[in-house]
Length: 270
Image 1 (cartoon, rainbow, N blue to C red):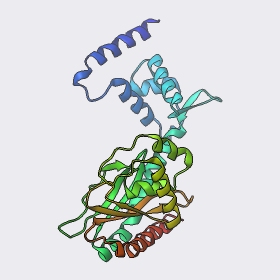
Image 2: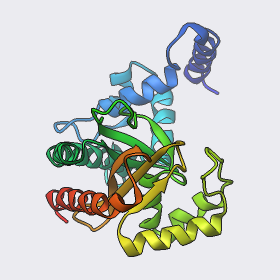
Image 3: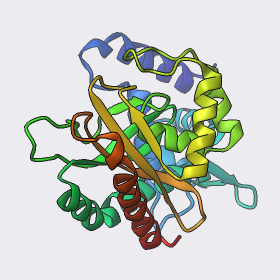
Image 4: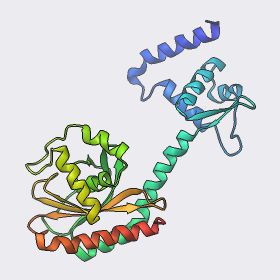
């Protein structure tokens, strides 16, 4: 080990020992600074330039760059040995852009659906094996479904999540269904075969009806939102208490939810 590397290692060990009062590790901070060093004007940078931008030794810059290359955040141009931003960043950026587009484009239609039904209206997007609420409009009724932007719930027991599972590829769906299903209420479907049968029904009818599977006394109806590539990127949901969402009203409410989801899908290029 040369003197520079040994000194750097000792410095990093000292920083780690002092880390209890820090908000982040220096290595993480340096990795983020390295990514931010790239721009439209400097799309490719060598190790000397990266080390200078971080004010660290070349050996430290090389170690950080190699880690980022292994994870796909940087790529190395074999023609000149310089580094450039990798496709992993593009994929992450595309996810953020899709979420922002769905939330922004859907708002007028969601507000119209709430005006017509006066029930809580939700926009949900997938987040691994959960759903994440990206937008919501609460009913004005005293008894209503409540939620907040950023709240996550399991896919398996929510109308929104069941819609996403129904239209998800088999390779993505199977690992989720293999996990034990936690019983949230007396109505939660915990039998994987029964849940698979329900997902088949959802694909046939075009919407999901969740009857107190997630919250006792509450029902939800959800329909899928498609993007221009015909992939399901989210869903519209209408939620309210069982005392108002009676059986004879479900078909009419489902039609309105499906229509709203299709209007949003068309805005996204479907």
